[in-house]
Amino acid sequence: MKKYELLFLIDSSIENEKIDEVVAKISDVIKNNGGNVTELNNWGKKKTAYEVNKKWEGFYSLINFEAPAELIKELERVMRIDERVMKFLVVKVDEKKIAQAEFFAQKRKEREAARSARFAAERAAAEEAEKASQPVESTQTEVQE
Image 1: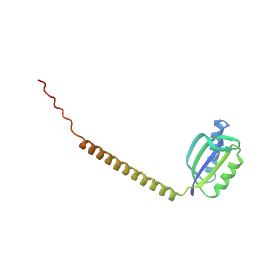
Image 2: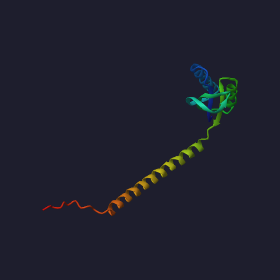
Image 3: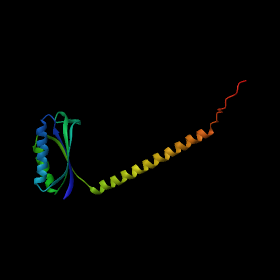
Image 4: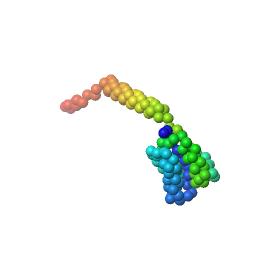
């Protein structure tokens, strides 16, 4: 089975119970057709980047799942029929690319940490050099006669 991500936008003008019903319906379609839902994230009501079905807001939901390739057509058909689903996108997850991106992100963090440590050390050395170059003020008091 292949791994997929499904991001869909539900009409936010409907009640919360109906939104949960739509999410459950889509999850059931995946489970009943040989798929396995691995993660379900409801992002909540958000403003869209552009007008969708004459609306500027929607309820976003993301489902990560494993399924056979034939399930995708059925899933898309069900979402097209349901009027409460405004938009959707199904993407096949490429694990090699995700692992590669995570590897490079970790390397980037390590480089940034090394650079920050180097700059901090240089700054501390510059401050020490500045202190050493300043004349020492005498703290002796003169005795008055």
